[in-house]
Image 1 (cartoon, rainbow, N blue to C red):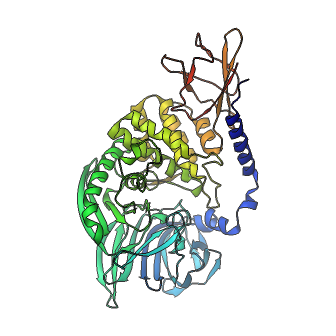
Image 2 (image 1 turned 90 degrees about the vertical axis):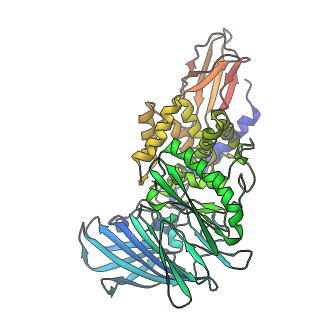
Image 3 (image 1 turned 180 degrees about the vertical axis):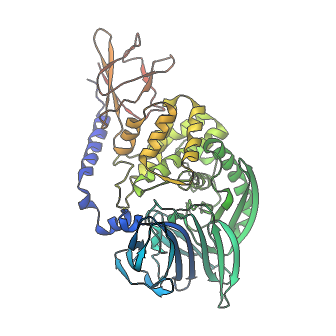
Amino acid sequence: MNYSFILICLLAVSAQANAQLFVPASQLFSRADSLRGQLTPLRTCYDINYYHLDVKVDPDARYISGSNLFRFTAVEDFSRLQFDLFDNLRIDRVVYHGRELPFQREYNAVFIDFPAQVAKGQLDSFAVYYSGNPIQAKRAPWDGGFDFKKDSNGKHWIATACQGLGASVWWPNKDHQSDEVDSMLISISVPQGLTNVSNGRFRGRQDLGDGYTRFNWFVSNPINNYNVAANIGDYVHFADTFHGEQGVLDLDYWVLRENEVKAKPHFDANVKPMLRAFEYWFGPYPFYEDGYKLVETAHLGMEHQSAVAYGNKYQNGYLGRDGSGTGWGNKWDFIIIHESGHEWFGNNITSKDLADMWIHESFTNYSESLYIDYHYGKRASQEYVHGNRRGIQNLSPIIGAYHVNNEGSGDMYNKGGVLHNMVRILINDDEKWRQILRGLNKQFYHRTVDYADIVDYISKQSGKDLSSVYAQYVRHATIPTLEFFFNPDGKAFCRWIADEPDFNMPVRIRIKGDEYRFIQPTRRLTPIDIAGLAPGNLQVDTFNFYIGILINE
């Protein structure tokens, strides 16, 4: 048997990593994780309709103070509910119909008791007043909180970024991805001479008479809490329009005063080509009512809905580098393309639980290759996907643990993009694949989803049961291995070695020099009906299929 020593080592490492997954959840996660991550009756009893977040930011003291109005519909009869705010921030009072409500805190969860039962179907509201020094992000956007910086002229330059950690790191809300507020007014007050840019449409500014100016922004589409952003700086504004599938889309750009000259040609070279490509592949930009914005930040970037944070320093690639090593990634600005791709996957379609963040990142990683496909062709896009494999580790699954605010491994990016490219090959009909991607954004328009929603939809629309394929690549750390056997009489057989019990992914093979053809291996030995196939002339499409190969003679 000609077993590859390297492959055996990889399988051994992956098996060890998989073994670590069977540690009981109670030993991995805390009460605080459950309070934030689980949908208990104290959270499902009310549905958020509208927020008005009104916050004053003192940059010198790195201090915030303000309020958030919760307007909700009662889903059930209740007299007690939970909202969330990190415990380093002080709750000054909770006001309901003009009176203060008692509250209790446990870690970052807050519980309030109403004076009388709130009836199912009732529209109601309460306001939370709070203050304090928010957590300062040490390495935004990878760790959450406020990013307090100054620009080259010494002026304050501040942004929020809180995906994963949670929006309650800086403002009180029902901090669970499953409940997106329907609309929202964001009012951020900053010292005069600075500007705040948030999500949605600008609704004007107000001089507060105390050296502060309030900037009001209204979001008319559903938005997830972690997307709500404050961006504060000495900004200048310029605008453009894009004629897209739903008419005229307003494009607004907010950049540091010192960067206006170089920002204009750079954004022009990247934004409209991105919108043309993504509307072709995914359907209309999902937030025409709120417009599209790029806002310059000191951190690298984030997919803040309708106000994408941009910090790639006006260069192509990822800070000038191409992670795929193919050269294709240096032909466009990674942050503009990737973070804007999240407007479709992450913002339009949002996972109900952080465990399914792979949905956001896998499709958005794949969107990079589809941008290349649209502008440079299919072969170029597949070279880019193949090149991204070098960043995959296969040490743990790309799906996280549910109900504890836990995301899967970082492989959700590159491995996820590789998975979607394989699904495209399996469907073997590029127009059908395009319609599936567009259909996802139409079927789940402004909705929250889970693993089953995505996998079931793609399987149904493709006419292929892809459940075992997604299960193997999403739920397990290891990649499957295709094992071949050749008998002395020339007969060939194959089977899958995989973690998923019913794994049965088709794969393309050929005799060297011939055309590729699909075979249908299972976990059991399957004969291969290709005359003349031998170990020396067997070729498997490992360019598109991310699998291991074993050949036994």
